[in-house]
Image 1: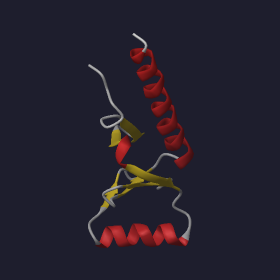
Image 2: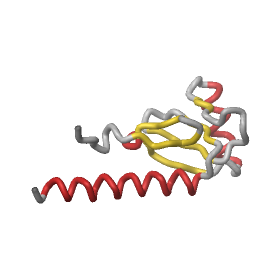
Image 3: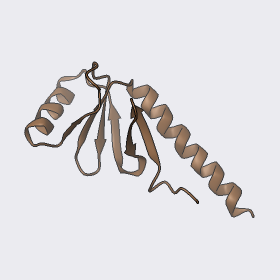
Image 4: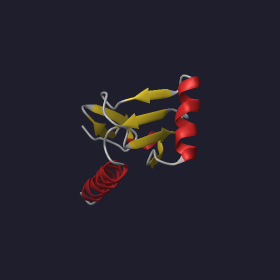
Length: 98
């Protein structure tokens, strides 16, 4: 079974995953614009809280305009995203040469 980037899942902490190809941005929650974005998403029922009651350390924004809160650092999630993408590309190159 081959996994494409369309179905690759990104671990955002505590057993929660997001479809990697749907992610638009991974940002830190500290700035005023990000706080506003979070509040607007909450009011419009587009907010998904995946922090398990812990402090929000990153905000994941999807192409469907959903805002996902995570207790994992933005840098950690970004690294998982890049590493997962690089792994998939390496695997794809290995499959193409056969």
